[in-house]
Length: 276
Image 1 (cartoon, one colour):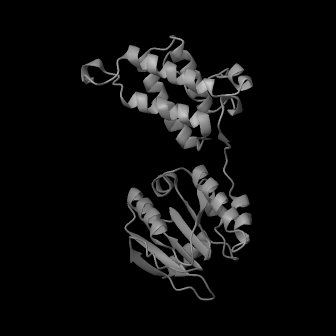
Image 2 (cartoon, helix red, strand yellow; image 1 turned 135 degrees about the vertical axis):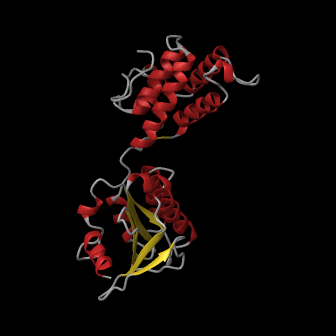
Image 3 (cartoon, one colour; image 1 turned 120 degrees about the vertical axis):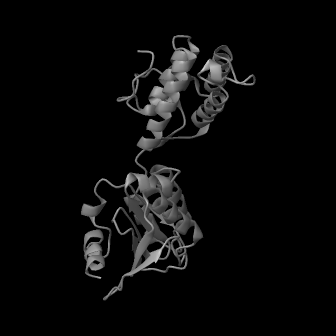
């Protein structure tokens, strides 16, 4: 029991918030909840535990004299606030302070599994939820402001900062559609850059999201290794033609001022084009 009480001292501040020292370097996001944990949140915690090998969770109802219990996953969906849940290795914790929201934080592997949509997407969704629930839970707006998305969701190329992985995606499209980047190199670089955008928490929406989704689907039908290609797969020539058409159609739907500055960006920092 002494170790469990020590966990509380590490994870929480005296006023019952997650400790900044413990949070250092860990992703964190607020999530919507009612007056109990609910199955959706329990599933998130369970997914994170399984990804990191945690087989148990520790629970502590927060009060004057908290009593720590240990339970096997899945997380108990009937849990009510104020409660803290955490993994025995302290790699992740869920603080359920009051009805309306929880704070979920942990190591990157845990959070990748528990919040597969990405931290920024989860934070943006919580902000929308907080606005809808402002009359019932006015404190949610302050929580949303404290955990705002790191990146704005870009909808047009002109909005994309030049030192981002999304800007590198646009640079790859420009090279490929102009014929200066071979299809295999384009495919490899696109997937590599996509992983970087996810890792960075970069978000897109509107016309830009539609364009990238189309490219994603086309690349799903292309095999880089000709020996592994199936008859129905796109050839390199067909891929370039289809991507070029999607690119032109995507730009056609953008304002003239945006089209004029499309893709005039350098490759994102830390992302190396396979063509070099």
